[in-house]
Length: 192
Image 1 (spheres, rainbow, N blue to C red):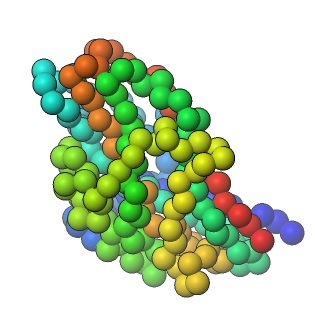
Image 2 (image 1 turned 30 degrees about the vertical axis):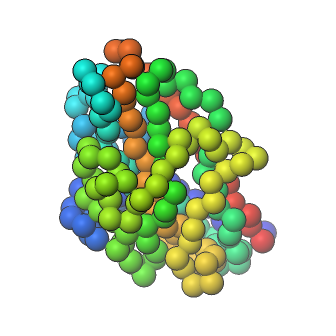
């Protein structure tokens, strides 16, 4: 029996509830996502985040989801999680935050959870996000459970998806200037 195949998709641009573009992030890099002061999928050195004199600044938030691209018709996928390696190597004053709510996205398609990205703090500017945590709080054994809005709260057909995972970089005035290292996010799921 062949396992299901998945892609990580990044929705960007457009308007609230209607993303302009959906991009399979494997076509972008490595690195596959670049957090910056722009809402696009381009991996470049434009629109850099700068260290603020005071307070904290934020990148444009990213809205990603896991999408089944093949062979799910004979499988049931659930218990989807996202996690990091558990260690923040971005440097002092820099963090990658993940929303603890999962705005609605599914294969209907329903994208009512999509908000046009901005550089404002996602907990105040994304309609469906009220709390966040550092993605580095979640490692292999303690991944962050991601909800599914498909029928039965499982993925069991090609093109079905998880809800959105919203991510954002924060830069405090205590950060040092320069390029940060690349971090890796990992998805896991159960397949039966």
